[in-house]
Length: 258
Figure 1: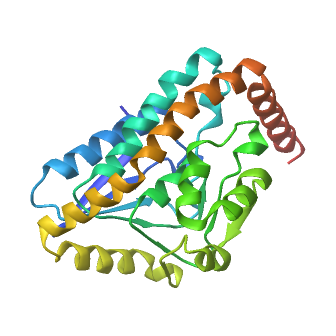
Figure 2: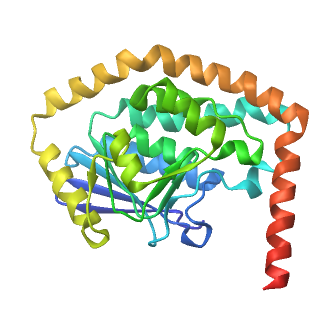
C-alpha cells in the first residue's frame, strides 16, 4: 500500500504529513483511511502530547477532494461518503490532544475544513485558503458550518457562493490563520507552538478541547445529516459529474496545447 500518510515523533509531538505531493495532497479513500489510523495512533500513544498536521512539498497543504474519485459517484454514494468524513472530522474534534496545522501552499475544500478543525494554523504569505467546491458543482455543507463558527455567516456566505480563495493576509485578518511567518519558519513555528501546548496540564487540555467540541456538537451533527441529504440531491441531478468531466476535458486540452 502506498504511504499516503507519513508520521514522525519529535519529543512529545507527533507530526503527520499528507503525502500525495504530485496530486497537491488531494484526498482519496486510501489517504483518508490512513489519516484516520494515524490520528487514532497518536491518540493512543500516551507519550504524544500534541500533533502537527502538514502537507508534503511546498505547493499545498491539501487541494481537497481528488476529483478523480468523486467523478464516479452517484446519488447512492452520498451516505457512505459522508460517514467517512464524519469519522475523520470527529477524530479532530474529539482528540484529547491539541492539533496544529502547518500550512504550506494551498488549503482548499475539505483540506481547508480540516485545517479549520485544527486548534491553531501556522501559515506563510504564499498560502491560499478557501472553499471552491461550487466550481465543481459540489455543494458545501460541512464547509459553511465550519466557516460560520470561525468567521461568521456573512463571510461564510461569501466564500461558499463565490468559491474564491483567500490570500494569506485576508485569511489572517479573518482569523483563519493563527500565526503568519516566513515560509522557511512555518515548520519550526508549528513545532514551537506544539511544544508549548504539550507542556500544558494534560487534564485541563483534554477538558478544554472536550468542552469546545460539546458547544459545537449540535451544529456538527446537523451538518453531517444535511450533507447526506444535500449531496444525494446534487449527485442525483448529475451536475457535479458534468462539471468534473468538463474540468478533466479542459485540463487534457491544456496538456495537449502545452
